Length: 335
Image 1 (cartoon, rainbow, N blue to C red):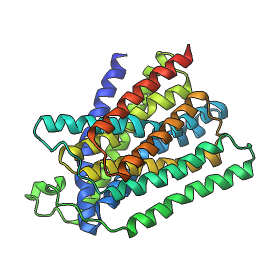
Image 2 (cartoon, helix red, strand yellow; image 1 turned 30 degrees about the horizontal axis):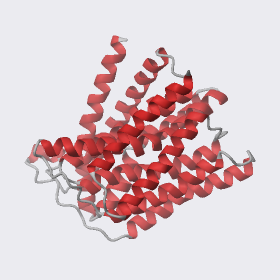
Image 3 (cartoon, one colour; image 1 turned 30 degrees about the vertical axis):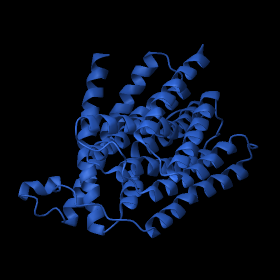
């Protein structure tokens, strides 16, 4: 148990350090390519930190037997949007308040609401289709066709995101790899790509060991595979998104911070949602159905708040309470 705890702490430290490198590198990449904050936060950052949660369902199918692999895979696919739409957004709200109290940022969120609105609409369309698919006849041809359609929504989303107008963010601090030379080479594309690539590698390695140790501890505590993959694994696999968003919120870069979360929701709903429908048995247990439904309802309410341009730290913070309530409900279902 002590060894597992040590690995947890070390892997968390690696993820935190790599996330700092990543946010700095990805902002410079956006500057270098003249990309707006919507593309940087919702696409580049979301894809860059999506590696851990993307690998969990894929590895589960390959590594475990068909029944257990499907159970873990389905739980991971539904668990990530549940975690992002409740706990991750909740932590964003809480940290906005904490940073404000420490005098690091204003309490009000400064957002490009168009970015969040587009992200949430694509997520709700894709993930709702994936959710409804679990109630459809288990016809392989039907499931594969629907899964392919959900999957292909992501290229459409990329097209509209690249096409949209938006402002290029302010110039970030010097690139970390360029600081050895006084920061004068921060715009060097090779250095930017090297730092970003190394940070993604660090995030991936840290998340791998974090997930591994979390799963060991959870299994010792007697969590069944699907509950583990819905509630526990996403805490680890979504940790990079949480860290990136928290770092950006501290600097007052709210569109990047929340766009990182909503962009990850789109990725989860389309790429992994399509994979789940097409390539697994897609049999959702009661906990998975509840988690997916909560993610959809949370997405709808957040979209309403975004459409009214009334998103606040108070509303975001409620997501953490929703997550805790669901944890209690899942525990009650085990009894």
